[in-house]
Amino acid sequence: MSGLWREKPATANQQRLVFREQKPRRVTQADVLLAMLRRARAAGKAVELPEILQVGIAQFTARIFELRERGFQIENEMERGDGQVKSRYWLRSDPELDGAR
Image 1 (tube, helix red, strand yellow):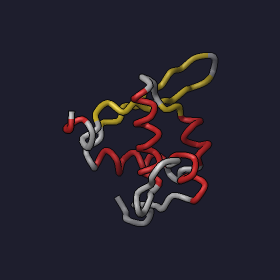
Image 2 (cartoon, helix red, strand yellow):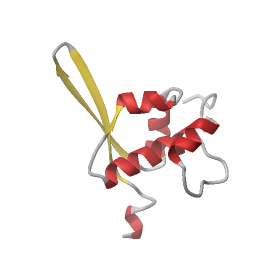
Image 3 (tube, helix red, strand yellow):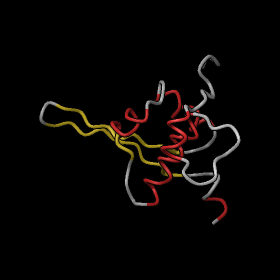
Image 4 (cartoon, one colour):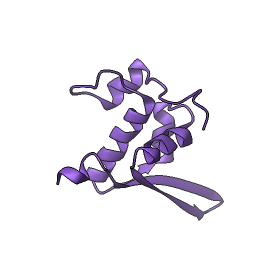
């Protein structure tokens, strides 16, 4: 994978949407996506594709790839019906938090 878009910085708006508490030093769009996945997982839910697009993450599939490279297991679920395809993402394994349990 080309390093051109790797570790794409999050915009100030993206940081405000996700990191209301204390935020890391340099927040990337992958960090924003990870925070969304963690919140959804804690609620027993998936992150729906429109939610990801609403936040404006550039090349979200590349951000998911970055997280998978870091050891996160992210499952994509697609549902077809009524002439539409609905896509959602589940965080199945979090190496940063699951190891601490």
